[in-house]
Length: 124
Image (tube, rainbow, N blue to C red; front, side):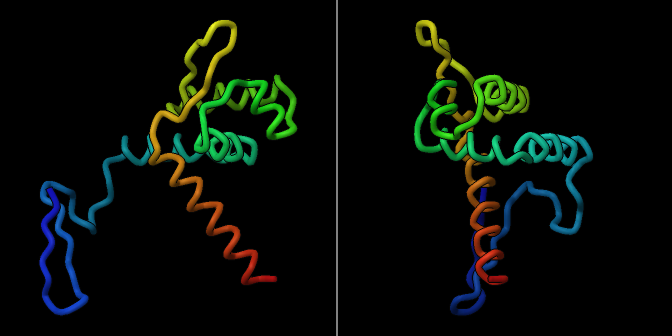
């Protein structure tokens, strides 16, 4: 439950009922899970795969064509993403169609790419 209270014009405070204090770190198991997720996303090819799957579900050969990477390498990266719970594969005849498990994950990737683009623009 989120409760918002306006204390002044354009000054809203958000209080999340049941959430830990903003000063308290999350439990160690949550930090470890976040670490595992970020590790799974921490490769250029895996970032590109997530961006592709954000647009539409894809099979391996479509990712190979779109990214210009070998089939064994795409399969290896998909396995890492699948093990981390980022993607899932659904058999469709002889092919496996991969999709994102959760849209939140694509937002992490998009935010990171946007940030990198902004930083490179500022430096250039």
